[in-house]
Length: 411
Image (cartoon, rainbow, N blue to C red; front, side, top):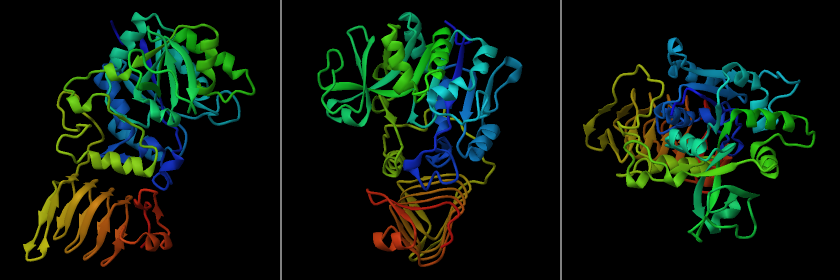
């Protein structure tokens, strides 16, 4: 089988309100993750590693940071008809921005007509996971499906937090319930688990085009795949199947990585997903040569750790430190540092995420915090030590006690 017959459309226009203030100046897919990556890098790597090279990235909300990242870091070969193309919202079907996920694709339907693929992958750009998408496409073709939806098995007691899909013994979709209040139908042969939608779809082209045209004419529609298009196809008796993400295997996958998928939609979930990377055998391995994770490469010098004079020791433990950083006489523990961070003498930083170009002054103490880029922290500053003090200074403090200092904040 070939993937030359498939067009990829990545929905990357999400506002990410629950990640505020990290999304104050950028779309959710552009939020840094794991030191040197952006969230959108994971879905892009999934497709590239799976052999898909015709990719459209649909942007809308505060997309400048995302545009720069894609332009600088994701150049493929036009000579071979390979591309990662940015597609900004252009109001081609009227005077409105994207009204929903289905409308985002409908407003760019001309790209599908121009490329004329047999299949269209419509994936979100704001989740952290590894996936061999080729296996899902193979399942779609073998099932002769009109639409295939990827789903992740979750404990049935957590069903109220997700959109839940019900299937028959052949994994054909029989029902969809948004955040059910009563226990839904479990997975075949597993009464303790149910299926949560991952928001990733593979359509047979003509089915998608017809569905989008119909949905665009329904005024009361939210023009959303989950709320409107999928129920419409189900009602029409189309062949809608569910792909079990737990069965997906990619090159170099470890046992702990099996079924790993994270929606880092809240500050606490985002912080925890970064901290999980620091485990000896993490559930998400960034270091696999079999499934490389590409991103824009900075032209920065190597990391430097300096000073060992009494209490003045430049040291990092259980941390990930990106290129261009200088740990100068301060200590960090369980931290994720983006490029060009400087930790000055006698400062202590623990359980924190420091983004690009953060400068931590001498004798500062930072605990369980996220410091966004271009922040200079004066000497003797305490962050994450006293919740009330952080709130008084205008910092956001999550339910889980993570203090967020916004991009470019003046302290």
